[in-house]
Structure formats: structure tokens, C-alpha cells
Image 1 (cartoon, rainbow, N blue to C red):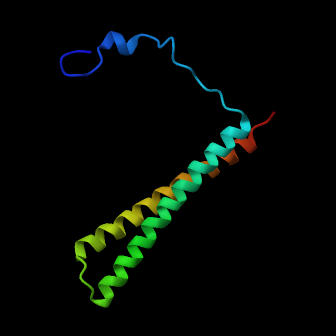
Image 2: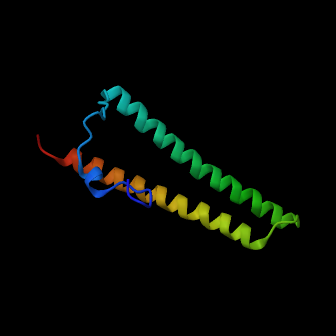
Image 3: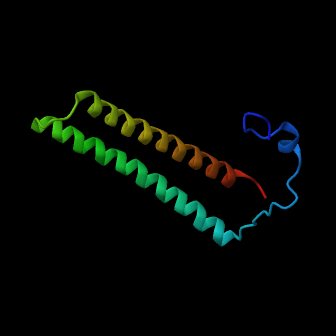
Length: 102
């Protein structure tokens, strides 16, 4: 370690001899990918629900800041758009794989 607490360049470039790598079975990889996908979709849903709740509070006249409502709305919108773009890229990749000749 150097004086600022960061690892030295030679330490970073050296291979880690005692570091173990875990190889996943296809079943484990499928479960892992499915859990990441489900968690991501749940996060997008939570942002959408939070945005809806804040908008309803604003409409009812409850004590909520307009800028917080707008920020929540934009977060939900951007996360949904990103999710849709990722979905589109995954579908494109799948279709490309299906077009490959074996």
C-alpha cells in the first residue's frame, strides 16, 4: 500500500495466486441471471409505484414538494426506458442467434 491507502500498481498487476474462481453450472447461471433480472424489474416497479404515490399526494394537496414529485417521475421514466432498451437489445441478440447457420 502507498501513503494514500491505495494499492500500488505492481500489486494490482500481479496475478492473484490464492484467488479462487467459481465455475457455474448452467443451472446455477440460469438461476443467477433470473434472480438479477427479477430484482431489476422489481426495482423499476418500485420506482413506478413511488412516483404514482407521490403524484397522488400532490393531487390531494398533501405536503409534498413539487420538485420531489418531478424527480421521482423522471427516475421512474428513465428506468423504464432503460429497461425497454435492454429488452430490445436482448431480443435483437436472440434473433441474431436464431439466424445463425449451424
